[in-house]
Each structure stands twice: as structure tokens, then as C-alpha cells.
Length: 123
Image (cartoon, rainbow, N blue to C red):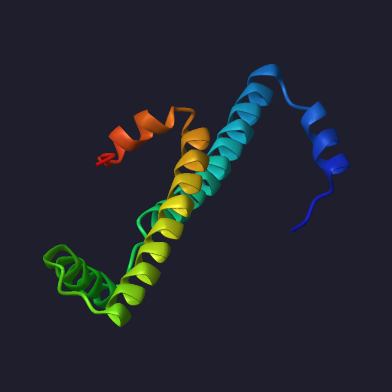
């Protein structure tokens, strides 16, 4: 059953004050639920993006190469490989910051407060 806005409006004109107030409360509640749902979906998507990192394989390789670099046993090819992984990590971190800023705006908190909420440390 689809009603036009005009039909609904004319029906509402016949309601007493108490019924009209109840209707308005219900409409406002519906609007809040829809906005909250949309916000929750948006926040969930941002949290997934914030938590995105290297794959397990890439992370293990990075740790291995980084140890070789620290031990000064890294080859030239491995050095170029770790440089690419570092670039990828930096890009992920830049994107992570963008998503943190967006989520902080949605939650109306500072990025620092958001990081505390999410138990993220800067180190």
C-alpha cells in the first residue's frame, strides 16, 4: 500500500493533539533509527579500513628483511624489496589517518580521543 504525502497529510489533519504528538514521536524515532543505522554502517566500513594492514605473508617478510637490515646482512635485492614494503606501509598509514579523521568527525571527537577509544597508540 503506497500513500502519497498529501494523502498522509490530510489524514493527519483529522488526528487529535495527543495522537498527532504520538505520530510525530514515532516518525522522529524512525528517522533516528535510520540515521543511526547508516552511521553504524559507515563507522564499520571505516573501522575495517583503519585496521587494514599488510598481509600476514608481507608482514612476516618485512620482519625478516628488517632483521637482516638490522644485522647488516641484507642483499641489494632484499633492500629494494623492503623499500617497497615500507612504501606500502607508509601508504596504509596515510590512508589510516584519513579514515581516522573521517571517523572522528562522525563521532564528533578529536582524532587523539578517537585513538584512545580505539586503543590505538602512536608508537
